[in-house]
Image (cartoon, rainbow, N blue to C red; front, side, top):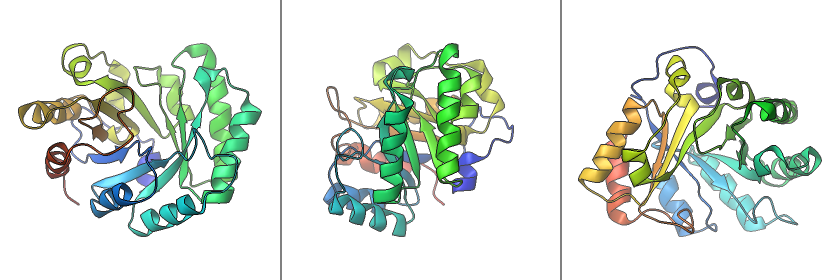
Length: 244
């Protein structure tokens, strides 16, 4: 799985035939995590976010949750925000270190990622530091919007879309260069999705647009990631993704 995520071999990405679910799982350890784990290997990637980062001290419940998820074959990465390249690297790396030391995560999710050219060196430097700490770690970047090809040297997976279903269906803007790379390098996150025809349309579009990782949820702003989607959306989404 790590090799599959991190591979940089050029390949067409116009059809994501091997999609899996990556979940912004910003909810406390417990039943929702158990539900996600039961959907492995369709669910392949989750995020722990104890307190907008690792928190001030180790949380034993998250330690156990990470251990349990990994035992089920689900990879877990730690949430660290970067303030669009403006946050001090020392602060970012301090949180990265805590996630590895306290929670033994599989990698890091850098939220609030810039998509501007002048910030590429900042993220490339973070990438090198994460890999120095753990060579097998997955680095996921979240600009939540189209970005520049240079960012692929700073992340193994890039979330190139994060918005509501109307924007995804009617206002989507992609980047042509992504078609040169494997779909597993890209993640689309879509909220306010209705079950039935709308969800089926979004899945079809995500494949056409080369997203190897997806997360569709019925939840809405201000916090679409505080719980899992409705039962109808969850079951349809799981059924729609390829089985392994």
